[in-house]
Length: 280
Image (cartoon, rainbow, N blue to C red; front, side, top):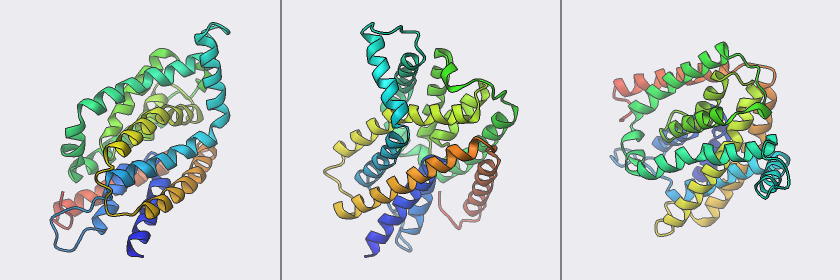
């Protein structure tokens, strides 16, 4: 029962934080501290299988929520490739933007696996990037022109946002936070920035999730298949609700609450690290 409750809590955290610009990886890292054995030097790890499957659950929420956009873009992209419609069609271009924008994180994620699993997981780094990228998000949200629409995304801008997505490999940065910050700084509206951010994440997260899933069958981790599936259902349901809330929220309001939350969390974590309450 204890393991099931832990799994459900991790699934809840995954669903709540995956799509908000506050870093799901940082929150899962911090929640894991509470599951560590008292006096043990070893940090609790839910396992690659658990993490991969629950991430697939949250991305399934993206596929369902944006199903009309994704179906239209994929359909038109194939028609554009085969010459049935002009390649200048906005949806054809968007298909290429998602593909091209995914390349940077695939390359860096593959080449920097060792650093991602070790150096970048230091809580000092997590605390610092929570603060730094929170400030950057706040500046981009305040100073960005917020005039360009989703359909006006250019190849140059798409590549720039794709490069920004690479920063999400560091826990604390936030995939949606980095890509949204980049899009806002390039002059896109809040809904356009978030929409492209979610669509851009689909191939990257599904790809990494399936890769980790295949690689981790020999190490299932502390949770049974049933517990992992239960957590995935929670992550999917909560993630879908969060996407709906977030898209409605940013169409009317700013990112200021998320910026403030990142700053407070980062400062609190720095204090806990400096006083020795939490080990890095």
